Amino acid sequence: LRERPYTVHIGTQLLDKVGEIGCGALSQPAKRAFLIADTGVPASARNLVADSLTEQGLATSRANVTPSEGVKTVATWQRLLTELAQSRHERSDPIIALGGGIVGDLAGFAAAAYRRGVPAIQCPTTLLAMVDASVGGKTGVNLDLAGEGLQKNMVGAFWQPAAVIADISVLSSLPARELRAGFAECLKHALIGQAVGDPGLLEWTRTNLAKSLTLNPQVLVELVGRNVKAKAGIVCQDEREEATDAEGGRALLNLGHTYAHAMETLEGLSLLGSPCSLLHGEAVGLGLIAAAACSEALGLAPAGLASDVKSMVAEAGLPTAVQGLPTNDALLGRMSHDKKARGGSPRLVLPTGDGDARVVADPPTSAVVAGWSSIRA
Ligand SMILES: NC(=O)c1ccc[n+]([C@@H]2O[C@H](COP(=O)([O-])OP(=O)(O)OC[C@H]3O[C@@H](n4cnc5c(N)ncnc54)[C@H](O)[C@@H]3O)[C@@H](O)[C@H]2O)c1
Image (cartoon, rainbow, N blue to C red; front, side, top):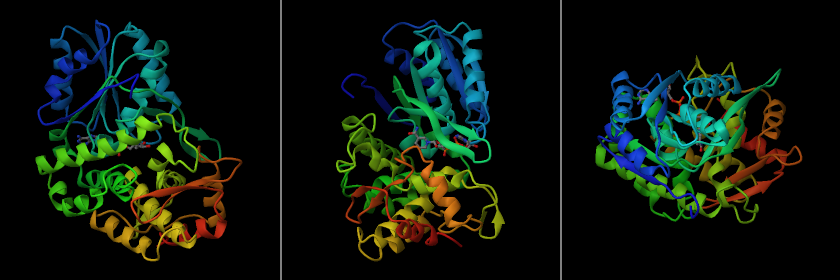
């Protein structure tokens, strides 16, 4: 980004350098640091980061967050703001987000708002946060609408980090289900490989899937690097998602997400007969299949795309169907609440099967429903 450039550091053994890298990325010297840490990250890794900040002479305060979509709320954000003020955090002092996408979104939004903006250093610790959430500056929280449940990412701000530090060694403690969930965002980027300037990304991702799942460090560094590059290329051209529907722009990165957001906070869902709530990445994987089916129904994609996408999602070990979805009317109602909707009609990003996607405003209901039918178990 021309006005707010930052470096994304990707590698191993980086957590004990967060203090040094973070301080080097600040435009003014800092006295304090505020570490917002995900309690899922092993304590040893959290301490490494805290110690690296102290070693730089920063008086370091800490707040822990145990993430869930129900915790990614205005109330938690307010708690963090209060703790920041109580720690005497000043304008030039950085907030360090150490965790998955939920902690990154919450901490980033706290950084955007506290004293009208303090530097954020994003240290993603899930694959999903490394390949997607930590980069690009979208921050925010969910809004709980009485009777309608959580509305995803309804409140937030664009706030670019001062630096991103992705230490792939920390992925070794990530549960396998969470690791696979991260692949959904990789598949999303790969399906629009042409649009993101990496047409070979889909084939490379599929070929290297097994090595990625066994945490081969070289493959993971390349996986994270190529995905960050793909996202950065789009964000640089359209940071605030202001491109027209015809241009596409940053909205293309929402591929699969209107379907995903409509289902991911629903209760009463089951996977393979077992009741459970969906992880964000799992909902995105299902959303990619549904978007492909919708695109086929509209004649925007060749027949067979939805079945191909389903195979890719299955190869990544992600669910390809879900039980317990509510009625189509209820789902359409939830989609019309999506923050990208206009005039109460959803705007969908639909893959065209040639490495690209199109933004479609107000798609016919029958095509949207074809998407839902493709993932109902
Ligand atoms: N801002 C953006 O551009 C953007 C993009 C994509 C997704 N998101 C958001 O990101 C969120 C999903 O992020 P996520 O998939 O990282 O989920 P998450 O933040 O819920 O983390 C997943 C789980 O892994 C645990 N965890 C994190 N790091 C760990 C580690 N190294 N070892 C062991 N456990 C660890 C967490 O405690 C949590 O239980 C959603 O809220 C989504 O809306 C934001």
